[in-house]
Image 1 (cartoon, rainbow, N blue to C red):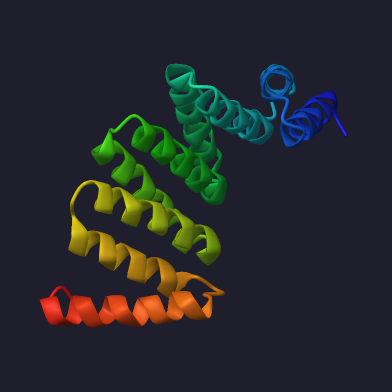
Image 2 (image 1 turned 135 degrees about the vertical axis):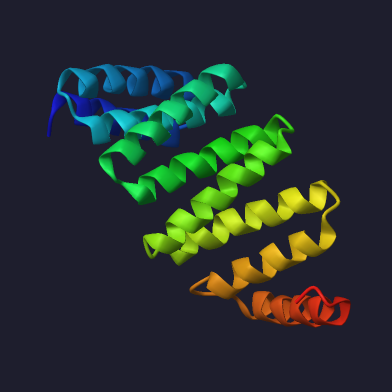
Amino acid sequence: MTHADTLKEEGLALFERGSRSQALARFEEAVRAYTAENNRAGQAEALNNVGVLQRLQGNREAAGQALQEAEAIFKEIGDHNQQAQALGNLGDLYAARRKRDEAAHCYSQAAALFAQTGDPARQSQVLRALSLLGMRSGRWFEAMARMEESIRVNPRPSLGQRLFRWLLRFVLGLSGSR
């Protein structure tokens, strides 16, 4: 385990204990250490963690910068699953800032990448976020269609979700939106 890996693990442990400021400091150290090691994947993962923590602490500008950099590195190295995770986190940031078009774009890209990488559970999560965003925007039928899709791709939908999906399909069918 490298020094950078140790810093990342310490950051994760601090985060789990609720020590966000200390976790953020460790992840920022990990970014520098991974950069010095020329470990692009580790650097991007640490940047993604920095972005999430910055968002949770209300530092939206810093969060956006870290998440955009992480997404770009994941794209550059061809790690599409991690790229999708960074895009989902960016979507959450944009949604919190009420930048709904940007959020929808990130969620849509993330869903497509999760589908491409065979990660239906995470695909379902970002489709659900996209659905909720549509509801907040007053795009009811679009929101229902995304929620139906979210449940459809979910590898383990509950009975309640399966019933809700049936209801959504029924309503969408009646409206001609399907």
